[in-house]
Length: 317
Image (cartoon, rainbow, N blue to C red; front, side, top):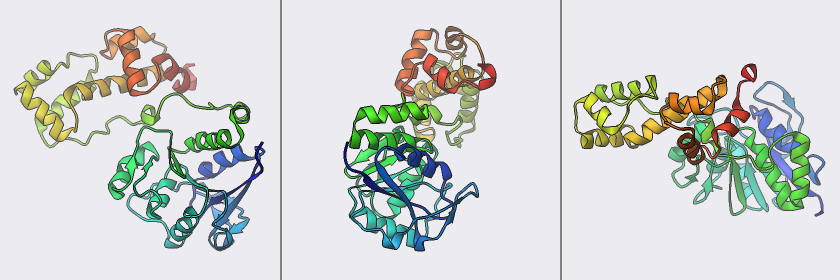
């Protein structure tokens, strides 16, 4: 096993508690010295109101520290982090062996300039905003974590655990990482990306009233006849014109939209009822369970049965 690695977790008031606790729990007892550091070394209060003790002032953290971890904060939506915190992250990120972020901690790395020209990810609900605010960052919305050089970013909340396990595997080998994952009862490498957590109705309502009615009809009856020809006839336009409308206002093709609605309808049924996969496939418009399985693997990275096992409501189990 390698010698102990020095890990500093950068925290400030409002930090997401699980973004701190998850990775720290993984690293605890696996050969790391983990310390929390804040501006001036003062204790901070997490997003849940629970206080966190701090061992170090960020001013005193040397740039030669092995690993810097930057947890996330509640959705910032255009509001930057305190300049003092950004400056500390920028300084440390230029000298450490690696810098990591959990969830919306990617915003802090981006504000510090550490993601310029790099690939990165964050919570699925924030990927679009991150890409818009920081156009020099190449955002990968479906990744659980992304490594680009010495910088590693992870997706939402518990994905920080996945990232920490990857660090353990990199530093100490797969056996110790596997042992840590078993102890925590988590996947060493979870199947699927974070598309499986996306919300329904993510499409911006189109300006065209007729197109809105077409979209609503698909959502109201995912298993109905929603071929390109049928939808064009419904709107009394040509198939070519309907395709142009979709590309302009929905940012995709009619087929892609229908497939997405059907996947999300099937997800809801898998999560909440006991119907068989074949029944769900027919109800949601896939026709056969094999067709639904192929679409789930392509879109969510996991087959329907595996998706149900992971996300089924406890009350229906």
